[in-house]
Amino acid sequence: MHRIRTALIVIALNNLLLALGFRLWQSIFNNFAVEELGVRADQIGLIQAIREVPGLVGFLVGVLALFLTEMRIAGLSMVLMGAGIFLTAAAHDLMGLVGATLVMSVGFHFFYTSNASAVLLTVGQDKSPKVLGQLNSLGALAAVLGTLLIFGTLDAWGYRTLFRVGGAVVVIGGLALLPFDRQPVRAERTSRRPPLRRRYWLYYALQFLMGSRRHIFTTFAVFLLVREYHVTAQTITLLFLLNNLIGTYFHQAFGKIVARFGERRVLTVNFVLLTLVFLGYALIPTLGALESPTFEVPRVSIGEWVLFPALPATPGLLILLGLFVTDHILFGFSIALHSYFQKIALGPDEITPNISLGQTINHIAAVIVPVVGGIVWEAVGAQYTFLAGVAIALLSLALTLHMRTPRHA
Image 1 (cartoon, rainbow, N blue to C red):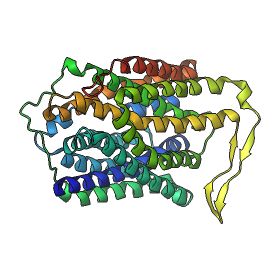
Image 2 (image 1 turned 120 degrees about the vertical axis):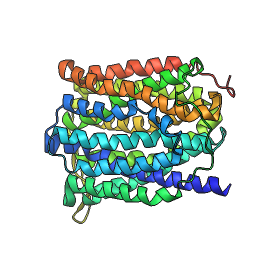
Image 3 (image 1 turned 135 degrees about the vertical axis):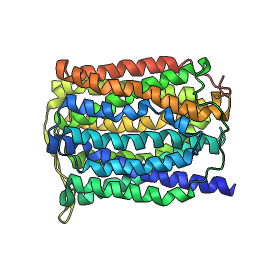
Image 4 (image 1 turned 90 degrees about the horizontal axis):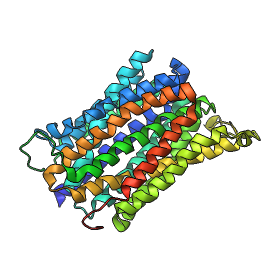
């Protein structure tokens, strides 16, 4: 029991570092790319596609797990992610930005898979949704700290210094935790080949669709707000702050909800609401009635410290900002897919290779979607990119209705 508690503490601290570094990177990346490097929609799509390439080789985590524990893989991945964030500050052209993003992404994706596998191996089926939810809540709390750091320092430091500081914190924290990543449970495996089985087809299909859904929204929702509505970096950061403040409570609740109602019911509600979110992003920018009246949301400041700058807004923009927060909340339900696989897995030895294989499948779509979405955006308009998201959400809903687990057969 003591070893399990120690392992969970280390896992929690690693999750805190991941959320702190990634949220800082995510909050200011689009503004940095647009304002300092002049990146276009098709180029941002290309960058995000390249960012997902490491996810295509996520199955290598299953191979690495033959030699290293999942917790050790997660710790080393954390250090690599921090290095990538740090290197973003040195980018002065598109190629430099792509290179730094790729380094960050290798660490992020390898951490994500190995960390999830470590949790599923350490705790039982009844506890895993709650533990995953608690870890997401801790991550949200760390992301709040990262957001406050942006608010307090962006004007004084600028984008590049923030990338350097955030990256250094993640690297140093990751290195400090490496000596303590002793994993209490490790599945015995003899084969390097992931056990691809027909039994897991629904898990693989939903991973593919979730990769598509996630990257339509994460790539182009923020880009729409920045380019079409001229939303500032501080406002984007405030949105992430609100997301994470909500997440500190709701992610824990999500774990309890999944444990109580089952994966099928939870994901069904999730995809219904997600369909409405995508419809909103597709249609609201085209509705002239929502373009007026224009008014200004007043700034919030303490002395000379501006917490929130004045924001020129329309009813349409305010609705889009609300849908942005809603999408982030809904993404917390993705823990249901991990707990679903834990219940249908034939044995502990199949968890890590299939979780890593699931990430690879997830990122087959994730590599394609940003590029295609950016081309569609530039060719025929942003609404068609988000209408594709509607179709993906509806297909995911249809597949979820076929979901069965031993508990909810």
